Each structure stands twice: as C-alpha cells, then as structure tokens.
Image 1: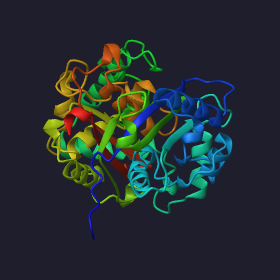
Image 2: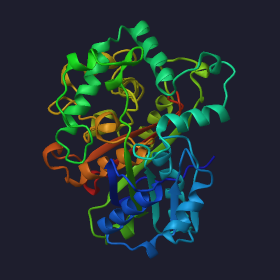
Image 3: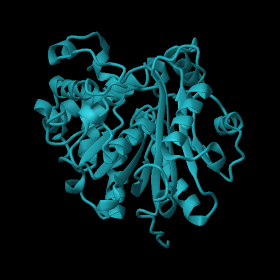
Length: 391
C-alpha cells in the first residue's frame, strides 16, 4: 500500500469551548454551537467558511445530520465515526486526507453535552445503552460500566506489577494541581492524597477521585491546509501525525488487561511524526480513570510496561514535575461531558500557542495527545502536534 505523507500538511487554526462545568437550560446543540462560534472567532473564519464537519454523540442517532442542520451547513465532507471519546482525535486523519484531496477547505470538529444538568443523566443513558448492547459474558454480573471494566484493568495492573492505590491517587492529585491553575476547570478545590485514598469507593480499587468528572461542556476546533493557516488570525499548530487503533470493545475480550491499543497507535504516530518521546514537551491523555494515565504513559513508551505507577509517583506529572501531563486538569478535574477527546486537543493547542498563563509549560513546541474510547480502553487515537519552529 502506498504511503501518503501527511506530516504538517494540515494545521489546527481555531479552538473554542463553552459551558464547561454546569450549563443549565442549554441543549447539547446549544453548547456545541457556542463552542463552534468561539473557535471561529479564534481563527477569524465565519461559519460560511466551514465545508467539513466531524462530530459524534453517544446518545443520538444520526448526530452529524443534527449538527449540520443546526449550524445551517451543507458540508462537502462529513465524518461521524463514533469510537467513543477517542473519536474527536481520530477525526483528524480523515480530515487531513479530505483537506489534502481538495474535498473541503475547512473542517470543524465539534462536540457538546449537557449530561450534568440534563434530566437524562449519565447513569440513565448508560443503562439504556447497556440494554441495547448486551454482553452474554458481562451482563449477568450487572457491571457499573465504564467504572467496573476499568477497575478490573486497574486491579490486574496492581496484581501484575505492584502498582498501588497511592500511584493511582498521584494521578488524581496531579490533575487537581493543574486544574487549580486553570480558571476554566470545574473542580479546583484543595485535594490531598489522604482524601483521595479514603474517599467513597465507586468500584474497587477506584474511589470517586479515580473517576472522571460528570460535567456539561462543549469543545470545537478547526483545521485547514497549512498554507492557508499561515494567513489566519492565530499561530497555527501543525499536525505531524495521527494514528488510531481498535482491538476490542469489552473488557472480557482484552488479550492482556494491562496493554491498550495505544501501544499500536502511539508507535505509528511517533514513526510518522519523525519524533521520539524525548522530543515531546507536553502530554494530554484522556484520563477517564486514573489507570488510563498510567497505561498510556507505558504504552506510548514514556516508561516501561509495569513502571507507570512509579513514573507518576511523587508529583512527576504534576506542575513542576518531569513530564507535564493533562495541564488543564484533564477529565479528572477540568471537564468531562461524557466524551473528552476534543478538550485534550484544545489544551494541547493552547499550550503550544503559549496561551495558558499560570499553567503554561515554558517553551512548549511539541505536544502528544492520546484519546481513549469505549468501556475498556477499547479505542485509542494518538496525535503529535508542533509549532512551525519545530519541523
């Protein structure tokens, strides 16, 4: 198969968020529209310039049609593949190819959810989906998914490699310390290891702080060809690579509970980017649960398999640590409106632009984003971004 060189051919030119935390009275489309408007203002484009749409929604069928209608668009490129929260990072590859082929000129990736304040809360929607997608191996045990599946993964990692509850808590604490530097973050109150470890149990070994927030919120970002990006309002951030891997859906079909598809997506993304882990300045990982961060750091090669717990220990990924991870506070403390991938991308762009004020990583020129989707680390998408000075 011939290889198409997509390295730095496309840039992210505008980003925007809306309603992060609580947005009572707002619909999912209302929030999505506000985030889209923010992203358009960010890059100086208008809605009429958008001819490509990427979007997904776990709860509504044919969601891309709803979005196109709401925004008043007739796109020449539309992508609605839903692989869970990783979708909003996985959307990048087809968008790059569509832009390079001339199918469209500006692609909007957008997402919105009112899961916190809607009368149809997260648990009710999740139970409805479980009825539609039964598993003969899991349903008899009535798992509280996704926490139960990720808890099994965490328990296996602890058994196999000696990872501890403190290691998991270090991930939550680091996220909270970053969130406290971010005015947009939903959870900013003080937190310590003792509080995390002694908090209400959700699904052993997870306490409530090991699990992502339940918030409203919307995120949007816009991509154009690199040549066009240079003429727009903000400094463009270039996509060096984007790769996605899907190995399973349910935890009972994982070949190894301690290895995720990001082992594949990460290796391919690094190869296509011509960079290594040592070139990365900031990392944004989809932290649906604390174990996700540990697994991703291992599978992406930042540490050896089984050493993720030790790697995150003693504030190594917190402000002032060796590797800045989830600098907005992540899904654990910043925002998590059911799917988080767009927000990880937006934070990476803001860091590379130098727009993050108190949480800014000094002289950040490269960023790695890793998306996670499904009830058991089922889909993973890895992107590597950079500023113009770095390629």
